[in-house]
Image (tube, rainbow, N blue to C red; front, side):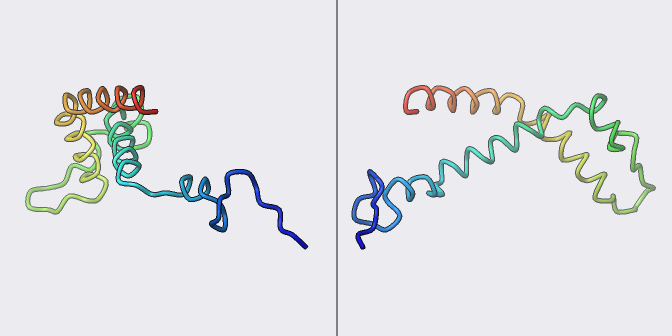
Length: 103
């Protein structure tokens, strides 16, 4: 019996549109990284982090002690918010313009 071929499937099994939808490109990787950095940048210390036990006064160690993973992640979040504020505005603006121009 003849197989039903969906429209736009072309000669490849599964169709060309399926391959485009499953493509993992450098652009999609950069866009995902941008979303993660944006998510870290908007975490507010008093509104969110302190309620889950990750405030700045949590995890203060003694002299010469290695900070725990919670203190290191809190420090990373604070550093991302401080250092990446202006570059994130520029990169987000460029991304919005590119999405508006090229879809």
